[in-house]
Image (cartoon, rainbow, N blue to C red; front, side, top):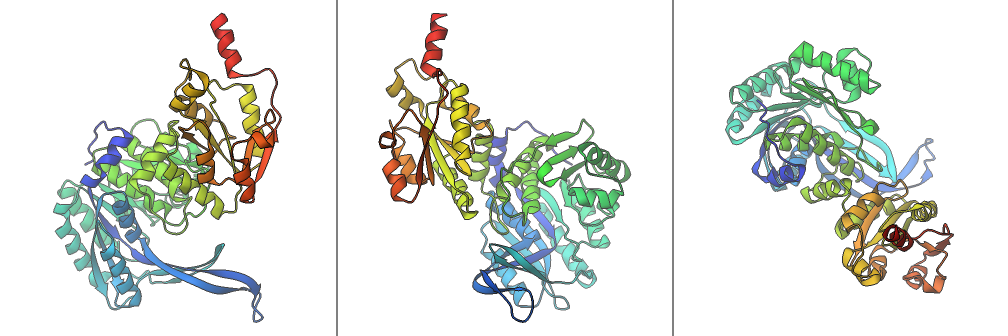
Length: 482
C-alpha cells in the first residue's frame, strides 16, 4: 500500500538515497552509432553513414534502474538476457553502475533485446534485434529472483516493454508476492489489457496506450481523465498517471484530476524519457511522498531528460536546480553551462544582456523582447543584491535577487536567468561566450562591457532602442514623493 506523508519536493529528493526500488521487466541494450552522412549511396537512394563512434548503454528496465541509481537511490533489477555478446555487454554495464544490483536470468534460446540507432545529427535508422516470445522456460527463475529480492526493497516497479518477460503467470506471481510483502507496486504498461496489472497501486500509460487499452478517445484533457477513470473502475487500480508528451501529465485518483503542464522548454531526444518519469515516481513514493508531489517531481525530470542526447538520466542536483528555477530561482553556473551546451549542440545562437531589473517596467519589457529577437536563446545576467547596493546605494534593491529572477523568468522573451556579484558582468560574459551581446542604445559600443571579448570570439554586439521616459530610479522617486 502507498504511504502518504507531507514532504516538500526538495525534501523528497534528499531522501532518495534511503530508497531501494526493485525493477522487474524487459532489460535491453541501447547501441548508438554516430557519424556523418554527407552523400547518397550509389546502390540506393539512402544516405551513407561514415561511422565515427559507437556507444552502448542500458535500455528498457535497465535504463529505469540506471535512472533510479543516478538519482541516488538503490536499484535491484530482475530481467532476462540471452547467452550472447549483447547479453554479456548489458550485464557488464549494469554491474559497473554504482547503485545497481542486477539479477539477470540467462535464456540460451533467445537473443538479448538490442536496439541500434544510427545517428547523423538526427536518427537515420533504428535496427532492432529481439524476440517477444514469452519466457515460459525461465518464468520460475524470474519469480524466484523477485521473491528473494522483496525483503531488500521499498517498492516494486514493473517495466513492461512487451518483450516476453512479464507474462501473465509472472505478473500474477510478482504482484501477489509484492502485495503480500506490503510493497507498493507501479506498472508501466505495454499491453492493451490493463486488467493484467490488477493489484498494482499506480499505472503509468502514455496517451496512446491509454486509448488502445480502453478503446476510448484520449485527445483532450477531459477525455484522458474519463479514460483513466474507466481503467480504475474496471481494474481496481488505485491511480493512473497518464503521460501526454508536449501536453504534460494527468493524474487520476479518487479526487479531482491533477493536470501538470509539460516542463520542457525544448525537446532534443525523447529516448528513455518514460523511464526517467517512472524512476522518479518510484523513488518519491518509496520515500513516503504523496502521489501529486511524486507526479510533479516526475514531470520536472521529464522536462530535463528530453533536452539531452541518447538514453539519458537525471541527477538529483539537476532536478533540484530545475525546481529552484521553476519556482523563480536563479540558475547556478553549472546548470547554466549545461543548458547553454545543449542549445549550442542544436546550432542555436545564445544572446546575453544584463541589468539590475529592480522594478520591471515597460522599458525593460521592450529591451528584453528586442534582445530575444536578436538571438535564439536569451540569458539575462542579474546584478546580485550586493552588486546593486554598490551601484545604486543602500536603499536598493527594492526586491531581492530571487524575487527579481522570478519576475524575469516569467517573461517569454527570457530563457535563463543567472546572477553576478561583481560590479560588471565581464567574468560572466567570458564564461558564457555569447554569440550576441545586447545592450540599450543609450550606450555606445565602446562603452559596452564585454564587447571586445565577444567581437574577438566571432560574436556581435547589438544596441537596441529604448522606450523613453522609463527608469526604475524615476519610479522609486515618484513613489517616495507620492
